[in-house]
Amino acid sequence: MRRGVLLFAAVPVVATAAVYFLAPADSADAPAAPPAATAGAGREEAKDRAERERERERERDDAVVAALPAGLAAPEKKELAQRLVASAENSTLDWRGLYGSIEDLDDGQGYTAGIAGFCTGTHDLLTLVERYTDDHPDNGLARYLPALRTVDGTDSHEGLDPGFTDAWRAEARVPAFRAAQEAERDRVYFDPAVRLAKLDGLSSLGQFVYYDAIIFHGPDTEDDGFYALRERAMERADTPAEGGDETAYLDAFLDVRRDALLRDTRTRDTTRVDTAQRRFLEAGNLGLRTPLVWEVYGDRYEVP
Image (cartoon, rainbow, N blue to C red; front, side):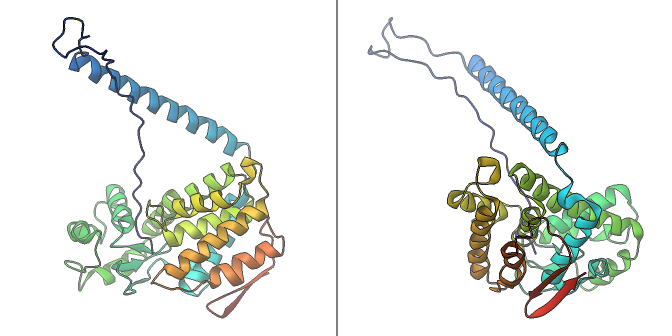
């Protein structure tokens, strides 16, 4: 149910500027502007430096994350996370029963399908099928790629009806496509959310809070996308990595998240925060230990 999955990294560029003194432009004393080729080379060099620095920062972050406990990435915690998300997204704990799910929810995002709610209108379903087709060219969804590219960014079914839904359900019975769904879910949603939460100093509950938010709001740059919600929360409270209290920060994040849910025309339901995540936080369960009891949309769930 994501609004989008494309992020654009800003590349710092240092422009080469000439300094002019108070002299007429045609004066012999006026310094000459640097040749265009020299200025261009300077910009390329600055870009290369910025890219190298980003790579060094990523390597440092990788080292930090690698030294931390597994947290939500531990197999039993990751399984719990999928069950929690499925309860909110699909009113079930059986997330593996969702590989073949596909329907138009009339939310402006076209068909929503699979274990992470990949959408034909938000690029993530297209990317999933493209990557799957690279590895399995003869799959039953490959013939729909031209149509998927056409409808990407819209709620249109043009070129998809009437056969795409049946093709999706059929392909979902193939183990390789199930594995592809899990891999894409992890690549786009789970891994980035858990990684950033760890860098922010958050424990398993905080890592899940980030994951659930990125699943619903999307890893995009819109006002209510996941990264914007995090920025607003950080304006209200410091993360543990900044020296703040984890409970206070997560409380601020959930406040921001709740406001975003109220603005979202798809649901305006806040129970996944109010009677699930907030309940865990108020109980002091930062480790997301079981047993867990929570409610979403009025339905009660329990994991022993």
